[in-house]
Length: 616
Image (cartoon, rainbow, N blue to C red):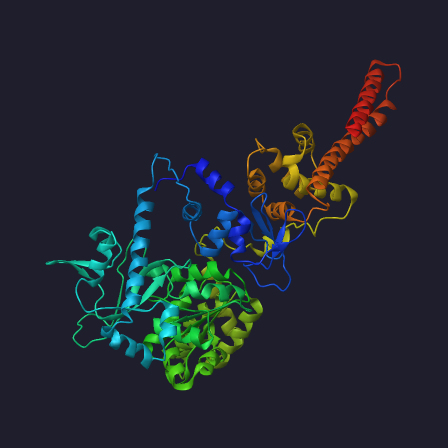
């Protein structure tokens, strides 16, 4: 796919106000010179620690460490690619992007048309739900406890029984048959092109940003020989293994929950029932089993918060049990805790709400059991525990499950649980679990997700402003770097270059300094963001805090003057250190020697330079 020209990326970033973009999601208030603050959208907090600096186009959360520019924010919030983030912002300001081949990217242009076609189709389907012909569809929804308000909230629509209603409507709007075929809205048959969805209730399937990717449709009429549920086929936009129905509606409450919780149900009506009952973090797969790709989506939404929960609801029958075991395999590597909740008498959330009310759906979360327990029970179910062979076979089947528990205390407790259920000695169970764990470690490790969380070692190494020593030298270096990053554009260029060319005494602060010193042009918009991004770990978070922290000054002019003074103080400190070295050296050499005269000359030059610097 062609890449967007770098000049255009820079131009979009320069024209977009990061405060406007973030302000649509976060309530921001003034927090000192050139700084805004609000509650972090990436983690739950009671007092605001999320700082935005519009002047430099950067944000940083002092609580969770998330930071970046306006493109990073959109990618994190809406889970877009970098290209999609740039294109969305360019469209917002009406800026025409250019690509490396000199024109618009063909694939991107095609994707935009498919998005538009799906949006138009969703609107058309919604309108049809109110027609007399859709009585069967409205009755279907009503029988499941969904009124017109619920249908509108979820965008539910109706596809008429005719063969070309949608086709005619969208071609009249300018969409070609090839575009409608590519979007999966129509099908090609021996007699031509016809509507894919006919005589069905329609649910729009959206991505996390709310853009319609495809549709799910439920059969209504006995003369419909198609499957009970029919989804959009695989398209450029729609991949059933890479989308979760309802996530666009659930994402905000997921991120704000305490703990963060995602409830995975089995169908569209279950998602609707959960949301209407108050379980607003429910999502569902679209015509496929929950898999690794789905877990990847959830991981990006909930992060790797060990306190977060993923709760699966499954039917208690054999198919549901198999689905649970498959889902368990997908949770490997997930930091969050996973659970299984089975409704009373095997009722799914939709039927549970109909028969027992909203409170019963909410209380379903109280019945959840750890997925490890549920899967262990499934592993034991196939063995006759009355026999020695059955118990040994069950232990070898369930042992690897327990071995996957990362917390050694939790693992030991589950070893005891397994020992009690098998009627075996806990020591034997421990040895088998330990053996299974060693076998697991011999397999190649899966690559760590590039945007994954820091490891415990990284967490210990992470340096923050609060963790810096309070010595005079470190305070000077900290304040100077904060000023350089935030107000360096207002400092004399030669003075700034000289100051940032001097090594600092704290290794973390010096790593930040080196990144600033490597910036070729500090007059370019966004140079400070680039410098922070280039800081080596584990000091990048420290750099982000320095860029977004509150600089102690009354106003911009005072901040610029203070930054200039800090630059002089760094240079003066270096001159004073050099002077001490020369004073020590002059006492070790004869005063009238050539070396002695050279040292005295250097001392006079240092004093003169210091006086000039102070006088500026």
